[in-house]
Image (cartoon, rainbow, N blue to C red; front, side, top):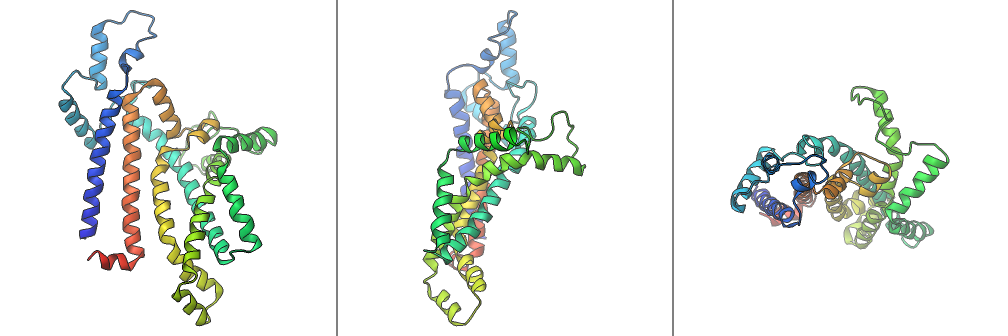
Length: 328
């Protein structure tokens, strides 16, 4: 419990620090988003209207400490403001409409890459030096080094435009009304997600593979592995119950950090396949200088990253009894 409270306090302080930076950085940028919003207006815009819009969007001419306290209060009450680009839609509504798609696409890609890469890494370590190890490890590193935009464009051209096996974009068929109670709609979503999910997954397998392979190789010469072999245990039991299980700790940390970054979305993949995730929302907010959306999304990304780091701390303590004893 003491360890739990210490880590929780640390992450709460980190969240406040990140929120402070999130408050300062947009206000240090040049330009006025409200003035930019009315820059292309054909009719004359009075200063009174601009001032009222600033107040509506939260850009008040108050001392910075007062703005900061108001900003923190809005964060913890769930009032993250109104989008400038998509006025009058609130930031909460805009992010809520995109977060599910990013979590589905990026989160699924990370979990798939972790499972595939870990299994491939386990066999590469157990059969190190074999033809399998000599082929699979360099191959995955080569695939990982290819820019994601190249992979996405090749996959799009080959399977969507050339062979026409899969749709070329969107999360579901255009004109379809989302019906979350219909199995047909889920099949349509899955069908549209095949290509972007493949592109988001393939580039991450190599990292998990090499991590698991190196971790496991370091453990294969340990005494408990030799003892397990001497006891006559089956190869599968030695590999998975002894070597792989103890090699999972660094990989679990990498998985948790990767899941924490999943909320940022796959910007390149989402752009190429026109996928309605948070990566596209962030790009549009940067172009429009939509400070409210930028602040909301960066804060959401920070919260996810801190949460999964905290979860990784708890999982490692749970998986490694030595850390529990050391923390008492």
